[in-house]
Image (cartoon, rainbow, N blue to C red; front, side):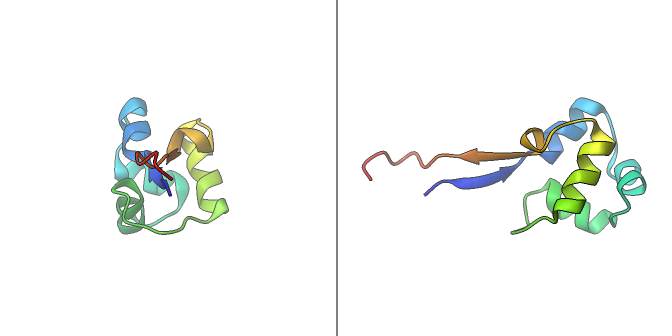
Length: 74
């Protein structure tokens, strides 16, 4: 089975936006955005995802990707 990978760090770098600035725009605590940025979460609220997309002018697929399992024997 593959896995979900968060690419928030890449989108933030592309937009040249800091964690503090994004936190203010989205209304999510720095510590929670840091966990998202570093992929240390197991879930994300749709309202948070929508706020991130609005602030970063992107689509959910820019932030969240699905990586297929490299084991093709299944």
